[in-house]
Image 1 (tube, rainbow, N blue to C red):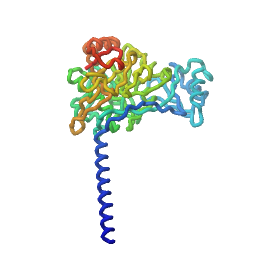
Image 2: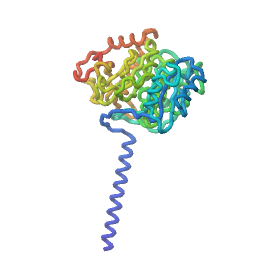
Image 3: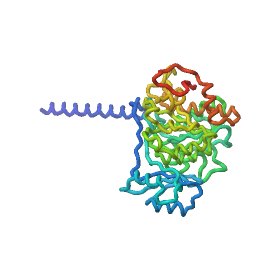
Image 4: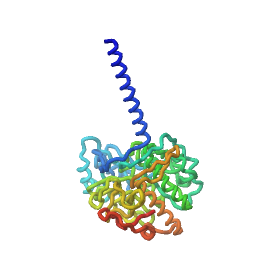
Length: 416
């Protein structure tokens, strides 16, 4: 009997050891690689108590406070580094129907008509699932040594998870220099999540670092003077709020020539996000906004993805081609009216912090290549081309393709 008990104890110990060893191996693999994810639909999560409003210009502080009182605002938040305070996030507290509040404000009840020009719902969403995507591991947030001495050529703002400026393949100074316009400790870019100047990419898949690397590498290879303006709008979990995106966009547009946005959400109401579209519209002749089309394999003519589907003519939406550029990637969104070009987006070359080759995939990595190509066109024009002229040149430079006819894009061109 004692022998049987001893054998039983040994058996349990062996099984336990094997399970722990397998668990450790699995955890190690998960830290190294995020395997291919299923196509998912990134539906936003709406706030039950918050709205975002935009005032008409030249309202006094007293007039703004009167409007807040009229509509029962408990607390409000303004954008960091904002010079006009036109946009605010209003919180009405628990137990309030924000849909009714929005209808009331839209109708102009309780205040002079037109004092509030736009009202949007507040929401949050995650970055879409990536494909064969690797993280960097530990990093650190110091970046002063990577700021260019003088801004030259093209400025590309990257609205994303931030940047690890010390990633080994950023060999030269490449960050925007805020000297002359900096406020509140701004040196280069801003963290709209933490409300400070530390835009370090703390997301485990270092999404913003990858996007910035693609832009920086292509422009260095092409010899195009440039700087990247980091705009952190996603937290360490890859979650962004609409308000932070608006604040980041408001900050980026007057400072940059191109705004790169490799994130997005799906929506059924085309009128729900008017403040974003109005901002982009103001810069339609001076700033190109390049966006990722999304990774859900959807036709966005029917199932709308933002910000890529906004109709402003200075917004580009980029789909992904597959590994050998022979067709559209299986995960990529498409649309003959809402997506503009294809660009490589499957197994794009990337290296982890140990310089091990790790391919990355997603329309997130197609879009920054087009930002770089657009920057080159702008620079070669003597910095005078408008967004429309840049897009026209892209149509001339692109290669006409014979991809799956059921998954088209507007111009039927591959950019590479």
